[in-house]
Image (cartoon, rainbow, N blue to C red; front, side):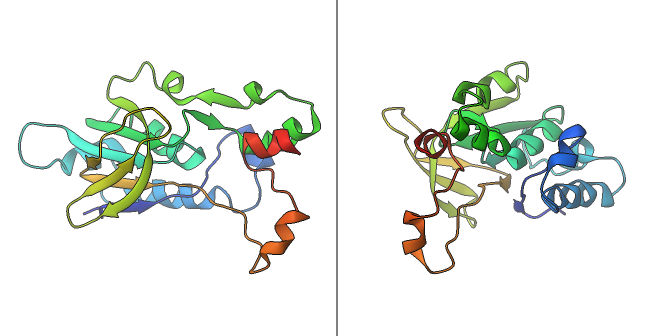
Length: 193
């Protein structure tokens, strides 16, 4: 039995893996191995076996459109499940290149790609622009907030939840350092630098 809450960090494969910081792909490898440990059949058959009663498809909600969220959706897109990717931005940001936007070598559009365009050929994947306000693990629901003027449902139910919300800078209790050590983790911060 797979628990309702799966935690993912970032993950890379192929040539990009060599450029990744040490350890950034380990969480995803653990996630992939965890699925395969059950019976060696891979994610699609394990998730199919977890289907709840009734004729509806298994509902998987992925929070976060970063590397971890994209990898989770990509691995499950051919499985017999309905996937909802929830993110407060409508694009995937390739964060390893934000410094190149900060230096002017790349434009912001070269490192940001619309999430809907990534999964446009997958009928079982939908992208929802919203911010997660709260988790109700007992009721298996997310409480959502709209982003800007884009309407969003107040609640979103799930059978399986994958949280890949990313990270934020830490100044180790010295928030005054933020004035002198600019972070380059978003398009806005890269353009500002």
